[in-house]
Length: 476
Image 1 (tube, rainbow, N blue to C red):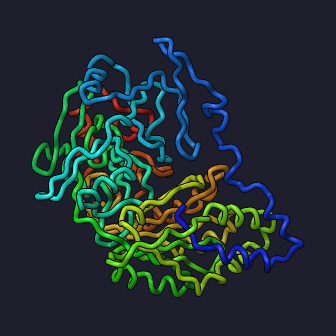
Image 2: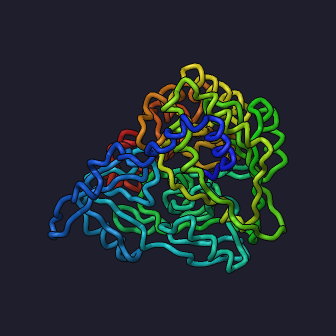
């Protein structure tokens, strides 16, 4: 979760509630309990013994809502090693990056393949303003290397632990009306198919493969490098402040138009919204703020669980005290974009047409309040530019992405089921890496390039080597 400047509000909240209720703050934070899949963790499940006698550990994703027991794990050291591995094996294969997806893209009981050794900056082309990275490079590993070259990415998602391969495979995105997903910044890619053949693709070479591979859900082959469009390095000034909800909604579109990046965080059961803008600047760098977001949200959850009938009062008391607090910082672009996620959660995100984004958000917030949903995690509201990536949620339409979260050790099904029909009412498309309940038929109705994608997939992987149960249900 992004840093939420609530330190002063927390202190005032505790004081306002009085010493008689202060014991509630000593309850264990809900985020520190066992995950729903703790029984499958490597601490309790030592995996299986493979054919070569080596132990094969189970896998689970970041939040713990997904797990599997592969029968083989591989981390090839080079493209050549990868090609040999694919040529000598007939097993189904799924690739894994940083395990930050909440949808069942990775789980397999066959071969699990990591690109962790295929990473790093490979080249910078300043004439064409592109940079090529190994596909296993984490986003947080791109910034310093590009900065040394006087370069930077055009934009970044707000989680920088994800790999380039995983981020582009799911059209992961940041915010900003002039910026698409990371997939839209891809200029070229290299991919190894099930037979071990290396394919290079771009807008002018293997064009159909390029259009499919920029958001391929791991169903075409193994992406081994990604070439991104870049620009000269730059610094960002970040501003955060709170507004009453009605005022925030009224200002949102103007801030979206006037800022390089704009987003806001709406708090369930509360009447205040956290606003955030990011703009280029020449100002000197400032120290980063103290990030106490995890403790803040955990304390809010403790209070509202202990005193559910005071939920709105407690949250509004904390947030109202922050109205005069404006937090600012200046730093290199990639240091501002990326955020540490120390508090685990599960997430659902839908992107709706930009012109209906605020209308959808207001209905979502009203529904949460009407049904008294058991949630304190703020929702995230962002703007994304239209792109031409075949399976991108932003294909040919400017969009607003609305993300809802629940603590990783709290049930999320009822909460997400409450909101998903609203997103669908507004013609929402789900984020490929996040929780949703759509079927292949429903996806096909939302993507006009669904059948062309399936045709490319069948051509490059006719035997379905890169399927798991989930992707086979979509594309077989």
